[in-house]
Length: 281
Image (tube, rainbow, N blue to C red; front, side):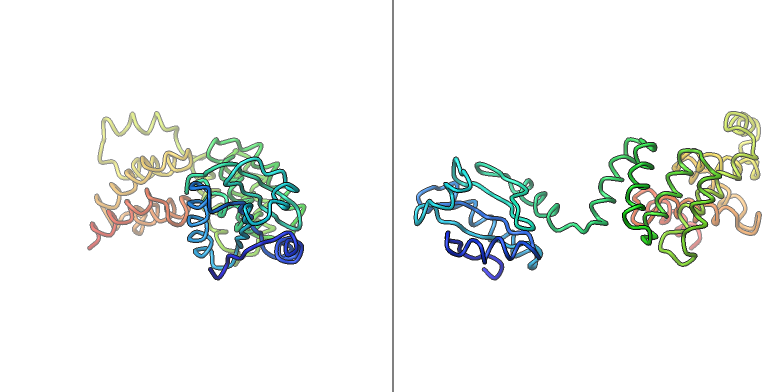
């Protein structure tokens, strides 16, 4: 295998420790006499090739020489040690499901920025905005020129409801920074919603006047600002379907604003983008 190689006690320093300074090395302890270990070897050889050199696989045959296994306190076969920057950073004992190995390889090959985004995503999924803000402020302190972190900071500040601080954060983001329009649009929707009637009043009005186009538009903005995105898109779509000329095509434009807040690749945005396209064409 191009990205797999045999490791002996004599080659361990050069092939594993020194190589791990630039790329993580997964070290598999195996033996031909162990069926689970042979299966793990085949599995890892196939997997490591898929990562195109972003991670390497070292193969230590315990039957040929047990010295290295003894030194790293291997208790059973198969056994994995992950060496990164000359240090053992992970160890796994026994057979592992493919998904666990893929998860390990993904973790090893993620950039620092990817790791931060993954951690941030966990906070945002729980709507733990306070922890997300603390995390982002620490990331910005370490990488003050990273515009993507500042974009996320502004976005989280809007979601937490601190609109003034969000405005200040946005001022520190270059105008051409990728995805700057996401927090900027979210902030604009929040500002607009603050000046509109409350959701309950708008819904009550629509009971009596279900096709009142201005109320539908206001409801779309209020729902979007409250992160009730599907309801917001539904109201904006109804504005579009009722009178496309209203407000200079404000139904379509409001849908596009919500798509921007939802971000690229969002399934809900994709579904409503198709519905919008089908109506228009």
